[in-house]
Amino acid sequence: MKALRILVVEDDVMIGGLLAETLEDLGYVVCAVETNAAKAVAAAAHHHPDLMIVDVGLGEESGVAAVKEILRSGFVPHVFATGDALRDLSLGPDAVLIQKPFRGPDIVHAIDRALAAKPALARALRQEPI
Image 1 (spheres, rainbow, N blue to C red):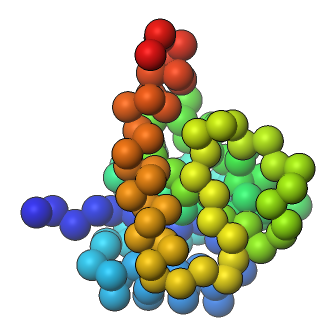
Image 2 (cartoon, rainbow, N blue to C red):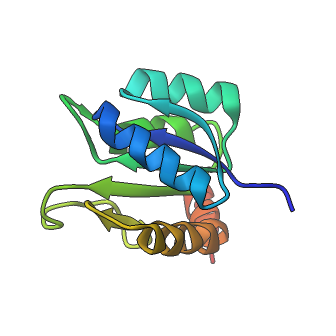
């Protein structure tokens, strides 16, 4: 079975590197680690990842806005990560969100949830009835 290719988007270089290392230890392939929205959009277009793990806050930028931009070209399952309190985030009812700090099992569970939600989210993005 082909390993899942993951794009990591995290503005903290140390956290991004640790997350990439953890993902690789879990058997995934990290196709890129990007630190801002523009680089994330370019990396998604270049690498065509199977899944993205995206920090909600990318410094002054928004990881949510980056994901929305990437999804304009087609659906990519994604997991949002945040170190902030989970309140006041309007990511949608089907969004997969994990709270930092997280462990390997948390990441695997979030990835599984994002992959399982793909058909429903893809239909919603195309505005088709479910």
